[in-house]
Image (cartoon, rainbow, N blue to C red; front, side, top):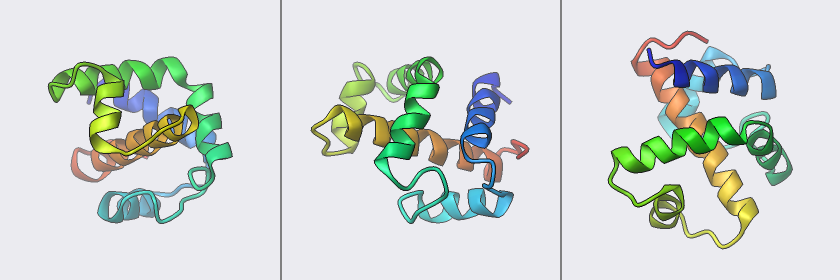
Length: 111
């Protein structure tokens, strides 16, 4: 398993320690916008982003490259109609959590 996913999972668990394997299953099935501890309010998602900015932006840069976007902001604009820095940070936090949930549920990343 790519070490980047392990680091992201550890960052998520540190930010929202009450998230369970079942929560990751629900995030994987339905997305994170339904409301999961630590990822509901902008104040929480912005805090998660700010605390893990280098890790998140490195990951998003890799994702953007893998999906043929010019950069992470190009990917953001293509996938989300956002207009502020906080919206970008919220989207980035949700994107990371959803990708990690996919790795937990479909690729054996251990919670």
